[in-house]
Length: 396
Image 1 (tube, rainbow, N blue to C red):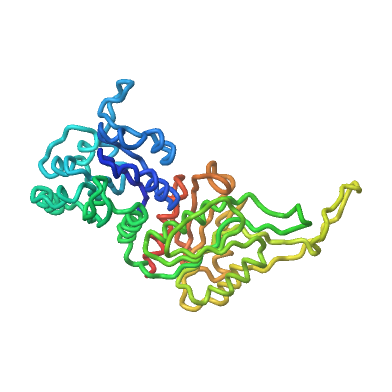
Image 2: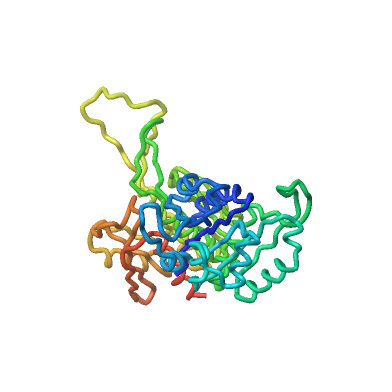
């Protein structure tokens, strides 16, 4: 499982002012973020701002203001990566020498997963033999240390000691997560996501309730595996930013088909998660249709079958389709798997509570060419996406 949970530990240095920017970048890139502060860190950055941007409560003491014990062990188990930024000389020294006197350090000493730190201090402090020695000590303990950068410091001096900029820290975090599935690293992936809208007139359309959440979760999972992703997206409010992502926005099924035809041949993997409208109006009115009749006939014509075309045209590529069914799910999904030359089909049903369009969760059954079934229980779409990607990785 490759979830994206990052706990940011913020110690009391002026560079803490950069952390809200980092939190925003991480959240926009699909990470779940929580923040904890040392007691002095709140003098440099507002817990309210961090809570608002991270969408999670922010803690700074082992005992909360309302006399609750904050479970540092749970925080350590929750996260996949503990990022301490800025790392001051004081917090560094405590980490290196086993001193545990606040929530951040209690969490650090409870960590079984990866810890990454980004030092920030004045140039003379950063160059001090004690600091250099302490950095080597935590490196030997398995901590990944991001080097401080050269630049203008809070003292007005110019030199090494400046905390790495948020954009660069984001890149380092993404690289760390990409290490988790080397089988897919460098693979080119085409993903379709969201609904398509078929215009009736300038203000009305035929569509469906797809939010695009499943396709976007898959996109984030493939990106975290080191893939290059082309995302062909129907209308949705979702967004992703990543250097290895190319996003193409489309509206109709015909537009989606055009983009798929342009890119499919150069991809290793195709995951067609979009809910494409099967039909479109034969005629799209130029002007808004006025309500001047009791009834109006709307003639529909069939849209191109994008998944079927990709199956016919595939050449040593792995192809995954989705099937949302209201009845006889296994039967219909099996037929889709065979008729459209798929390697896997992902079935979900409107009969399952919390699954399907619009939900943040999903429950699916995956079928392969041998009709083997893998059932994934109800969980977040990000977790479902990670499991789907893990299954796909086993094919390489």
